[in-house]
Length: 443
Figure 1 (tube, rainbow, N blue to C red):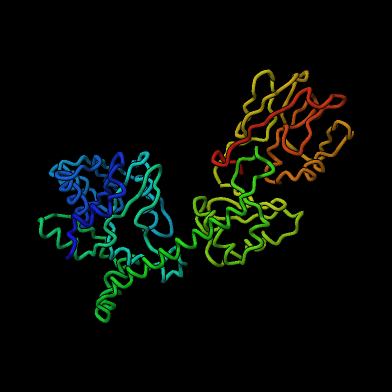
Figure 2: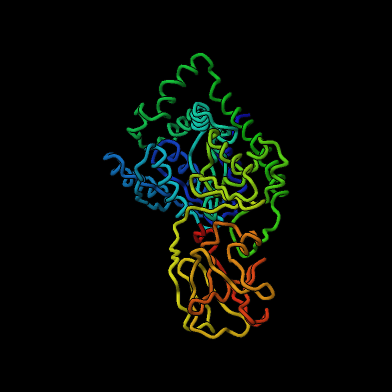
C-alpha cells in the first residue's frame, strides 16, 4: 500500500518531534509551499513543536521584491508566523554558491539550540546534485549528495522530502489548490542546475524512464559508503589523538607517527574527516602539499595553506591554525601593577604566582638574539632553548618575554621552558600565560 505524503513526512520527522521549535525555510516556491502546508495541516491533528517560517530575501532580481508579501499572505492564511530576512550576497565566481552561502548564514542565525530548520529539497533535487557533482569530479562524500540531516549552528538542518519526487509535490499542490512562486531565474540555462533540469534530464528520462529513482538510489548507496569511511576515519584519528606536549597551546593537533603508518588513501580519508569542520577541503591536485608536509625533515617547519587556515608541522605533530583575523600586536606593553593579571592585546593574559620581581616590568616579543640567565646553566641563547623544548615555530613570535629595563628576566612557565632570573632559585616566582584559543585567532 502506498504511503500518503503526510504519513511519509511524519515518519521522516519522527526523530525531531521533541525539538524546541521547527523553522521552515520558505522561499514561496513549490517545494517549500507544499512543506509548509503539510506541516500546518498536521499541526491541527498532531502534537508538533512550534512552527515558524523563514523567508530569505537575496535582492538579486526585481521580481523578488514582491515575494515577501506573497509569503506573508500564505503564512497568515495558515496561521504560521513568518520572519523575513534580507541578506547581502557577496560577489564571487559563482552567484549560485554566493546566494546559498548568504541563505545559510541567515538559517544559522535563526536556528537556536536543539531547534530544527526544515528545507523542501526533494528527490529530483538530490539527483541533480549527484549528477552536478559527478560532472565536477567529486569524491564519495560529494556524490552522496545532500544528507537527510546535518548539524546547523546549535541545532539541525533536516530535509524530510528527499524521498518524494517533484511530481508527487505537484500532485499534492494541485489537490489542495496551492499557489506558489515561479522564480524566473529557474529558467536561466546559464545556471548549471537549470541546464541539467531542462536539457539533460529530459533526454535521460526519455531513454531511461527510471533514471531519477535509480540515481537517487545510487546517492543512498554512496551515503552509506561515506558513513563507513567516516567510521574508519574516526578509528584512525583516535590513534593519532595523543595529548599535546604543550597543553597550554589550545589549537587542534594530531600526532604524525600514527598517520604515517596508514596507507596514503587512509591518511587522506582521516585528514578529510578531521579538517571538514575546520576548512573547505582541498581538491585532489592539492594533496601533494600534504605529502610534502608529512615527509619534510624533522628540523623543518613546513605548512600547508588551505582555504580557511594553515596546517603546520612542528617535529612529529601537525597543528591547525585558522585564518581568523587577530588584533595581536608585537609592540611592548608596560606592566605597572604586576600584582594583577595583564591583558595582552590579541594575545591572552599574563599573571604571576609567587613573589613578584621588582619593576618596572615590561612585556616584549622576540626580535632575535635574546639571551637569558637559566638557573644552573648560565647565560643561554633563547632560540636554542626554544629549539630544545620543541615549541612550535608558529607560536614563538607570540611568546611574551618579561623584561626589566634591557634585562630579559624570563618567559612564561610552559612545558619544557625555563623562566628563572639570575641568582634566583626556581619557584620564587613564575609567570603564567593563557594564550588565545584557536577560535580567537591564534595564527
